[in-house]
Length: 492
Image (cartoon, rainbow, N blue to C red; front, side, top):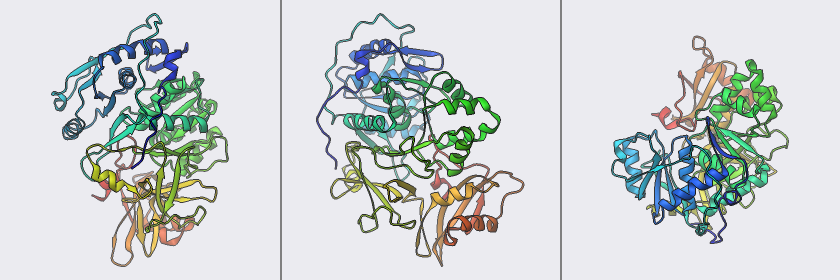
């Protein structure tokens, strides 16, 4: 189990200085740093004495103000996904026991939350006079900033305890690698109940003194509009970048806007190489991939400005230790070859401190020496960069004595002109142990590419043992709110 330094420093130093610029914009609603300081100071005072609060995390200005206000008060935030079902919400509330629920005044809440006292989040219509708010004592870095619940694919969702120090460490490491400053304006349309959209996409700009422009709902038109109007950075998930790649050939305004951006970042899942290449060809810009998860925040990132490296999530971030280990727990040296697949393990100041009320799960998650077992399988290039091949539970296929990562096969399939979307899983095979199964959304429903054609296509690019033995066709792949393919649903 990791230890967290007790060193304290403000999470949001820019709120003290209150630079004369917008802090947050959601649609046509905007608040400056002075306005945000006033709104959050008022909310922080109302939350005095609370241990933790739930936040109804809609993609709105109220959510951002509520989260920042709670963090300034030293209160732990439990973000609630508005799309969660009654059973999941009931479990999260009973497990985390928040003192109250923060929500916008006009939010309609489900009956599962009826038992929680509710506090409205107020956002001033106009910035008030800039009156310095009394500084609040900064809690120790070990105090949980968030309890973020996992997706619960193998049981009830687990509450991940993310300390304040981990939030600061991750955001500062990204700033060092990406050159992220107060001059940056970030645009995104990500949900605010998870690490990517909330911690990176809202708290990141506020920690560094920059601005956030949230689209409310992602659209390529919104991306083009905001980047053309001075935004410098774009955060997205592969589904969003896929839509961008599809739109670019017929949208010169979008291409021009992307060319003017300082940084394009994709995360939460692997961005297919085909989409990397299409965006680069149309804009001359490379999309930067980074790798993280709820329990670790951010672990690695491609370094902007270097040679394009589709398929890589880059080297470890400053302060993060990373190793790839085999089934016996022995480290696999970087540059060991294309079949040297192992599990990623990490340790550093970016890690969570445990699962709420689950000491058993916490203990199982860590190897000797404080290394967190991510469950992600990867290769390491000779320069230390990481290439993820998939999740150990769903994406590692053991076929004919080989360990095969689903990700590289998916990328190869996506290079076929008859394939719009692709996912790869394994299923039991009496001869091979497991056989490779491709799940395909064809580009033309009336003329899907056949199994032999796709098998030959993959074998020519990778190796014969990696070719799909079975192909199944779907009208669409099942995805979650972050755009990740839900492979357990495919297997079911």
